[in-house]
Image (tube, rainbow, N blue to C red; front, side, top):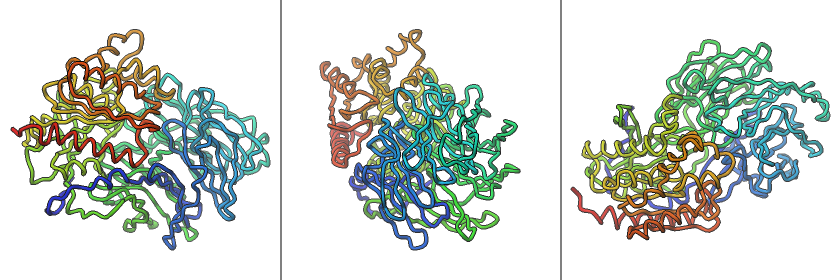
Amino acid sequence: MDPYRPARAERVSFPSDRVFLGRSILEPTFSRDASSLYFALQDGGSTCIARLDVGSGLVETITTTPEPSAGVLYGGGLFAVSDSALVYAARDGRVHRLDLGTGDQAPVTPVMGAVGAPVLSPCGRFLAFVADRDDEAAVFLADLQGTDLVRMPGCLAFSCDPVFGADGSWLAFQTWHGDQMPWVHSELRIVRFRTPLGQCEQLHQALPAEVTTVAAAEAHLAFPIAHPDPRKALFVSDESGTRAPWVLDLDSGERHAVARLEGEIGSPNWVQRMMPMALEQDGESLLAISRHEGVATLLRVELASGQASVLPSACRSISSMCAARDRNGVQRLAYVGSSPASRPTLWMRELGERGEPTAESARVSAAVGLWSSTRLAGAELVRWETAGGTQISGVLTRLAEVDRTPLVVLIHGGPTSCAELGWDPLAQFFATRGYACLAVNHRGSTQRGRAFQDLLRGAWGMVDVEDARTGAQAMVDRGIADPSRLVVMGGSSGGYTALMCLATDPDFWAAGVAMYPLADLYDAAKATHRFERPYQSWLVGPLPQAAATWRARSPIQHVSRVRAPVLLFHGTDDKAVPYQQSVDFAQAISRQGGVAQLTTYEGEGHGFRQPAHRRDMLDRIEAFLDKFVRFGRTAS
C-alpha cells in the first residue's frame, strides 16, 4: 500500500488545539426508513445525541440532559431508535425514553447502577439493555412505559450487545465468566420467548423463555446481529484462528463461517456496540469492516458463496457502521472513517442492486479548525523483525525530508489493541515539531489473528518491551531516527510498557512519558474495576503460582535501573489504575536523584476529558521533550 505523502510546504507546527479540542463521532444508527442518521457526539468532555436529516443535511442535537453516558465495561452502547422513539443510557444510571415527535422525555427504568447497550424490539414496545449492579452485568427486558422489568436468564458475570430477532421471537447477547476477558473466551445466549414480543401486551406473556448456549473452547464469540429470516442469526467468532463472520441456524443449532478473510472482522470488545458489520435487508449480503495490521477495508460479502468484494474507500481507519433501506428500497451505508490526512468523518453512501457503491459523501466532521493537508507529516505502515524473527508492524509518521530526528515510540493501550493508519493528531503534533513517531503494534496486538494476539499471554512486560526497542532500533538503522534521542510514550497499559522499557534498557531511551500507567501489578489488580480484574493473570500468570513473576514485571520494583527522565500524568478519580501508582513511582525516582515530573488532574478518570487538562498535558510534554530530548541532547 502506498504511504501518504503530502506535498512539500513550509513547515508549520500542527496547532495543539487540534489535538486537545478533538471531537468524537460514535455509533451511527439509521432510523428504520433511513431518512435520518443518529449519532453520539463527544465534545469538550460532554456527550450529546444528534440527528442528521439525510435529505436536507440538517444536523440537530436532540438530547443532552441527563447526559448520555453508558457505564458498563468501558462504556459504549449509548442509544437505540425506532420510528417514534429514542432510548438512551444516561449518567444517572437509568435508561431514558425520548419521543421523537413531541420531544417528551422520561426515564424507563429505575436507577440501576450503570446501564448501556439499549435495543428496541421490532414492535417498538419493549426494550432490552445491560445493567451492571450487584457484581453482575446482566441483560434486562423492560416495557417502554416503565411498568415492568425482567432479568434475562443465561447471563454470566458479564453481558454485552443484546439484539432482538427480526420477528421479536428471540433475544441474543454475548456473555462471559468473571475470571476471563471476553476476547479470551465468551459465549452467546439465545433467549427464545414463549410468545413473540409483537404479540405480547405485557412481558409476562413472553415468559418463561428457553435459553440456548452457543460456545466453542477458547473462542471469542461476539457481535450478534439479526437476520431477516428469524430462524438465523449472525455473529463473529475466532474459533477458526481469525475473527470472521459466522451464521447460526437457530432450529438445528448448526453454525459455519461465512467466509475466510485475510483481515479480522471485529476486535476485543472493551466497550459495547463496537459493531463491525451490518446485514443488507434482503439478507443476501453482509457489509463488514475488515482490519489487518492497522489498515481497514470495507467489504461486501455474499452469504451464500462467501465471496467478498471491496467497497472502495479513501478511509484507512473505519469504526462502527450501520445500514438500512429507504422507502424506495435504496440501500444506505454509514460509518466513521479517517485517513492519515483527513480527520474522523461520518460518511454515507448508497449501494446499487448489485452492490455498486456511490462515492463517499462526508456528512459530519470531527475536525476542529482548518488545516492544509500539505502541512501534515506523511504516514506509512512499516515492518521489522523483532527478537526471535517475528515480523512486527507499526505506523510511522514523519516529515519525509528530515532524517536522524528524535523519535517518539508510541505504545497503544489495551494492551490488546492496535494502532491504525488513520488520523492521529498526537503523531502529527510531534512530527510537525521535528520528531518522527512510530506507533508499535507489538506481539499481542489484534488484527493479525488469535495466534498473534496470544503471543502476549504470560509475556506482558517482555515481548512488548522487546518490540518497542527493536522498532526504535529499526528506525535508527534506516537512518530515520537519532539513536541518542529515543523516547517511549504510552497511556494505561502503554504507559506500563513505557516504564518497563525505561527499566529494561536504561541506556537505550533518552526519556519516557507515561499517562495513567500501571507501576505495581499487585496494587493495580486489587484496585482495578471488576471487568479488567482477571486480565493480569492472563498477561503475566495466575496467582499465587506466578507471584515472583508479578513482582519482576512491576516497574516500581526496578526504579533503581531507570536513568532517563520520566514525565507522568494521572487523574485522581481513576478507577482502573489508582493514581497513587504514579505518585509512588515518581517519588521513588526522585529519592534516587533521578528526574520524574508528575502532574495529577483532579476529577479525571482513566483518560482525560476536560480540554484544559488535555491542553496542559500537551504543553508539559512539549516542554519536557524540548528540554531533555529535542534540544537537550546532541544529535549523533
